[in-house]
Length: 161
Image (cartoon, rainbow, N blue to C red; front, side):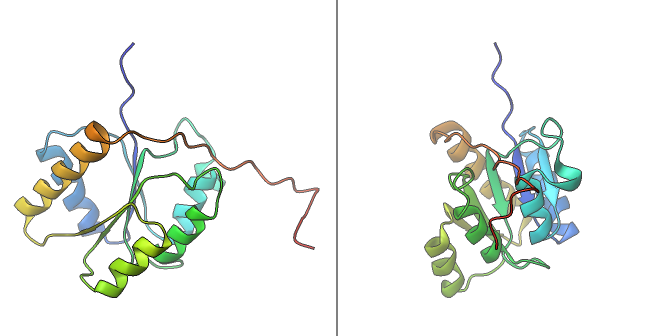
């Protein structure tokens, strides 16, 4: 039985960065499903399987998540913190892919629970090489944990009160 292709969730609001990422995957010969969300709230909705992301066959949980830090609605730090507080999602492998070289951002991302922090190279050849190395590590060398979507909330039982 052939092994299923890994799924990558890209949380990135910059369309040019998304295009460069897709191009890097193609030129590196990596053909995997890339699901893209453009802000922090969409990222959480995707992971919860809510709204337009409720069809699990169409929007499967990712084997790896590439997370930008500077997104609208909820930034990458807030998304990462939310993920790490969800028992069923806490093991998702999250790679921060950011233009930020600030040591405080690197430290904060790791403190919250990032599995890796990569700086987006401005040069396309370097970016493609970074994507190839990242993919080889996470999908050839590293063993993936089991991830499950959180259970749907019961609308008749509210624990917030």
